[in-house]
Length: 251
Image (cartoon, rainbow, N blue to C red):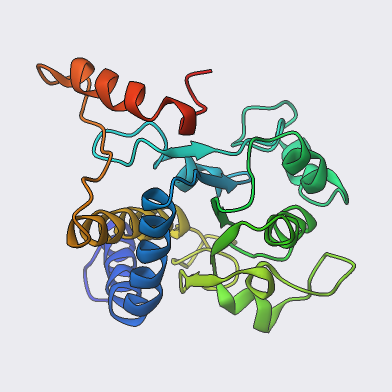
């Protein structure tokens, strides 16, 4: 790529992926936004789940300035981010059968709610069983994953299925298997993961589509403001009080 630096190449790769998901996933983004709007308008609750680094896009839409106040994190102890020691424990938990069922059984999620499940590979037991279990409970399930993994890898779940096989709506992040956009002479392993950038953008696009759909229906989107602008805390307090029965991150 001429005299471009590796940093330049990473930006080019990330921008290219963002353009692809904007153009190729417009339909699923609109469908997911409509599903979120349906849930908000009908009195349902919103949840997001991701394990490991896939938890970052889930957390990015919870209690977020400019985000929907009703989005709640569905946490799995030990699997949210890399805040456990050793960090490899989180990866091991993703392969434990029955964990998803235990989490769902102890969560406030119920029929009529919506759950977004984020898993780059979609091949591990935790996201697969989380999606299947949530649908069995009557939740609408939106999956955010890289469909390439289902084509190029094997499922690690006994069912042989992937996350995408248990979702009502699937958003494809277009991330290549391995999640590394760069190679360079003298560097033994590929590097430059872009999945977090792309998946966070997909999640925010869905939230924007949901807000647009709610306005079209004459419903004011329950959005939060930044707490670092004047009046932000007061605004957020009113919104969270109004929807207190559907917000679980304050409890």
